[in-house]
Structures are given as structure tokens and as C-alpha cells.
Length: 346
Image (cartoon, rainbow, N blue to C red; front, side, top):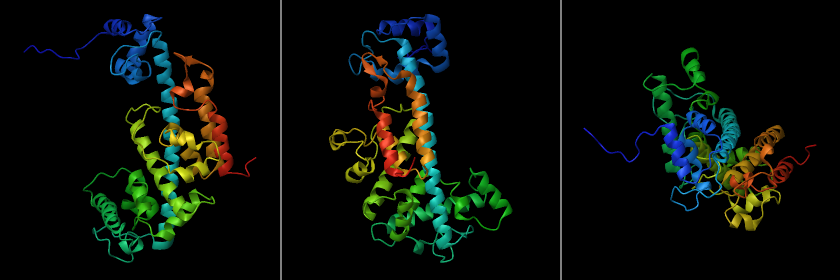
């Protein structure tokens, strides 16, 4: 049976001809074909065309668009993607470590893996250990039951165990402590676990992340939004979204955020949607939440590595940094945030 497809197979020569018909200049045909073999037409041309289109919603590129510029943008994007994922993972591990320590210290190291029950007062997943706020109670019960159910099913062999640490404890130890359970749960569950803590326990966690002069409520609000921003941003770029064009993200709360950035982000910039729910906001959030100055230094150093070769260079009159939604003085700004977090750092 013959069918007509709107996206039929096209060989590499056809792809080159299609790019040229869309105003993309090809300086070296063989190099372009090799690049398409490595990264695919869809990844390069479709993935970055919004930056180069003459008319949004069409396939007509701006005159002067060069294939090598598209490839360059992709390679920088990959570098930035990897470094951002690395530092968001560091924040995730930090949250899990802090949660595990607090819960183990206050509520013990044992949870009943034979039942879905969250009523046992000896169990660190007992609901009475967590917030009794009327707005949080329904979430508290649902989230604890989710964590307990997944653990019980894994211990019974009815659900796949992802963590080697959990597998080892199931096979060789007589209990599953919080620091082992944390190796199994996703970032979202760790954030949800934090969100149902009693108020005094939340204060302990937020004070470890944010040792600033903000009020307790402001710190809790900022931490919640910053963690959600990092989680959702990570999920999107892990599924092939460009690092510089991720939309529909949680917004960092204005008052506390501006204070924590040490004047490196202005109120007018924030009001114009700059730096509050984008790559720049993610970089700021990481620096603000890092517990070690060495992580901040490492992030800034990695960012230099990704961009330094392209400082001063433009694509169709636009700087590389601005394409990524970053200010031209990004490094000076990030250093100011680092100084705010670690004022005694030499």
C-alpha cells in the first residue's frame, strides 16, 4: 500500500539542499554532512531554529545564518547542559543528606517494611512526626503513603529496586534507615518530604541552606521555590530542551531573591522577567543554596570554560551570552552572589 508522508526520508544531500533553500549558508558541504551524521538534522536545525528565524513559525532563516553558527550553539548548549545538571544534582544530594540526618536524629532509623501503615510511633515515616497544619495534612498523608508503599513493594520484590544501596540493605541488614531510603527516591519526593516537615524541622533545614538575615517564612518560601525551579529545569533539559529556552518554570520570590543576589540583579530586571525563572536564575539559585564555597568556585570556573572562547563573538549581531539569556557581565554578577553567601571567603 502506497502512502504519502508529510515527513518522508531524506538523504544528507537532500538535507543540505533543504538548509540552503531556507537561507542557511553552508561553507563546507562535507563538514555539514558529517555534523548531521553525528547530531542529526532535527537536533541542529529544528532544535535551534527559533534563534535564527526571519519569521517566527516558518522555516525561513535570517540572511547570513551559517550552519557552523548553529553547530557552535549546539556544542555550547551541550557543555552548559552538562554543568548545570551536575550542580543541580549536588543540590539534590545536599537536600537528601540534610533530610536523612534530621529524620534519623529525631525520629529514628527504623521503618516497617512489612506494611503500608504510617501510624506506628516507632516508625520514622509515622505521620505524627510531620506537620499537623490543616493545609498540609492531606499532602502529608499522601506523600508518606507513597514513600512507604514504594519501599514496601521493593522489599517484597514486587517493584524494581533502582538503588544498589537499598538492595544491599534489604539483603544484608535488618532495617532501612533514612539515608538509604534517600538513595532510592527521586528529587520530587525529597522536596515533598521536606515540605511536610514540622515547622521547627523545616527551620533547621532552611537554616542549613540559607544562613541569612531573612525571616523564617521568607527562607522557607525561597528554598521551596528554588528547589522546584532546579528540579523542573533539570527535568526539562534532561529531555533535550535547550538550556537557554526553557519556559513555564517556578518563579523565585522577588524580595528574598533580590536580597540574596547581593545587588547583582536589579528590581527592574526581575520585573522584566529576567533572572527569575531562567538559566540565569538557575545559576543564582545554585550559588545561593551551595553549602560549600568550593562548589561556587567550581561552577563559575566551569562556566568560564564553556563561554570564554566565545566572549566578544556574535551570531547575527547577537552575543553568545545574550543568546543564552545571560548578561554580558555574568561572571562579575555571579561573584557578587558568591561573596554574599560566603563573605569571609578570600
